[in-house]
Length: 236
Image (cartoon, rainbow, N blue to C red):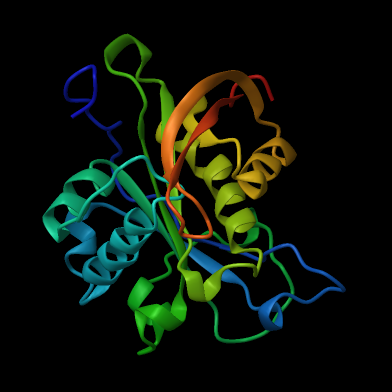
């Protein structure tokens, strides 16, 4: 529940087509050059994928426990995760098994099955990351969306965050959104700020002392400012 009350998701007739992406690379190689397929899920479809919801919920709970990126705190139960994260549309990235050249999303759209892509691997091994897309405001402002991203620790520093962000800019307009706003990008999250600016997002404002975050060294907490970051999808 937001400050505006319940915010309903944008309606879609069917899941959007899966796409395959390659992360940015150094010297042409990132994690063996393996592409990542992105799959559009809702809570109903995710429940049909054995073990996936539980894995995603566990990773998110650990992210909240670390207290460095999301504003929530305390223990996150599986039901709480599902109600929050799957309130709208979710996209899950699955690491491919074979090396290969990058293909553009337009060349790789198709009917890719998430279980087939996982190919009996554990979710820990193959989930590169995941994110939700949902309206940031209700009613007359529901054409502006918000998103929340999680990259499991085992897959960080491989370029997958950049890949997920690129796919977000690809998918959000297809869900009917005209713009995106991130309400709280903490100013010490340098990698995230740099990533969004690279993709054409701009800083719309700075909120002083917006988050009471844990210090990275684990020694206590501190108040941190946050940026509001915005991008229009219709001005491009």
